[in-house]
Image 1 (cartoon, helix red, strand yellow):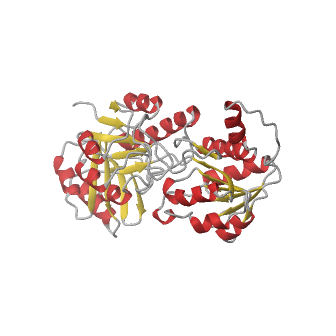
Image 2: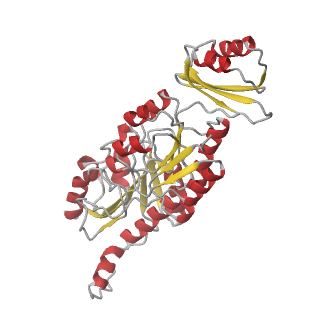
Image 3: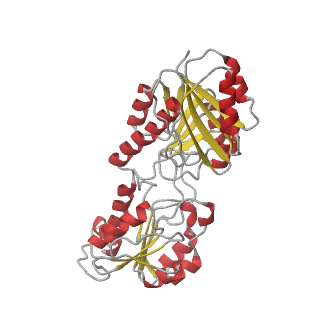
Length: 401
């Protein structure tokens, strides 16, 4: 048999390719993101796909990728993947929810300091040959209030480090989150905006966050405040942000994510925020440090390898989380099925009918799906596989030797 194939896009870290090759995969690496038609063509015969934020995995792509078993998002977000379609086809999706947290936080803190000290203006003046040793408009971050919108892994770590710099922290989150250190929870977003010298967005990519921050929210921010977005491009109205920067209502902004981003290095970046001297623009590099990308490469590729070899769905974002250590040398049956009563009994009934004893078994459920891993002695009876695949509840069945 030929080696199983893996496709890695968007300059996924070398360690991911090394790990998958060691696991027996023929790895195809590409530097750019792929459009829908290109991705459909590229996925023929591919079992494992690795992407970052600029490749969109649509329902059409998944429907035509008959061999695809797993998708790895080598980043935090998975909104670029149609999770419902992946789940319906039994395609496991993994991401890296923690690996680049520190890198994003450090970038946010550096931008808070740069904007509060007006370093963008000072830098531009110096490059133009102007020596302006004025303290006007330049402040320490100590004693200033940081408002964090979204208190997840990144927002909460930013909270802790910002307090270490002497900032007061207030946060807002729709979920009930424990305040760390001396941070204080705001009852509403409006309350946070009214009292914050710096507002930093760290929300996730759910559809409900689209256009979260626009004209109304910018108008409620304090005069002279600073705005940061290192979360998702579609949550902010950039036209409204530009108006409030040009009017002088806001002192500055730092933006790392955009509604439309170039698919390939070298493509022109287009934004209404270009050309503003008090705006720091970065090309979606919040998590792009060598340390973070190495961690992400190893973490996600490890999850893809474990799923491909053992069927483990630990930390999968869409399938029931199930893991079963290997204890024998027999066959492993991986059955994704509709979550209805009696499936496990029917599975074991099929095995008993074919004289196969269960050596190890674990079942997990999530929503409408159940997932059962079953170890049995080695067998050469295709009728067993056919019978399990024919169960009306079966969504997908794989067999591992």
